[in-house]
Length: 81
Image 1 (cartoon, one colour):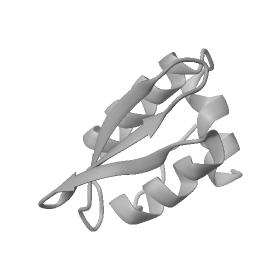
Image 2 (spheres, one colour; image 1 turned 180 degrees about the vertical axis):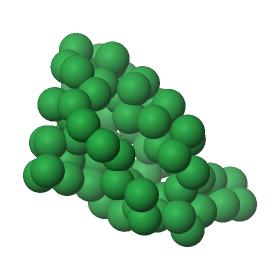
Image 3 (cartoon, one colour; image 1 turned 90 degrees about the vertical axis):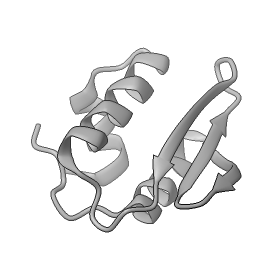
Image 4 (spheres, one colour; image 1 turned 45 degrees about the vertical axis):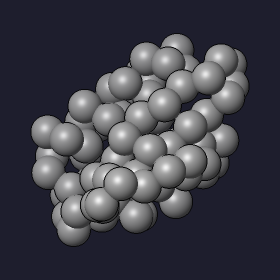
């Protein structure tokens, strides 16, 4: 499945709220978000506009791996495509 091309860091953080990720701290233009299910997981999201495709792909791959789902399933769940 194709990644969204015009996604900002803030939009990604808002979308990841559906999976239980909450911002825990911010340093400059980077926000660390944390999910406690199934176990604690941290990931850093840059607040860039738009996110680079490689950065977005790496973030989504890490989250999909943590939640034991495919990247395509994660994209459908987050963005409804």
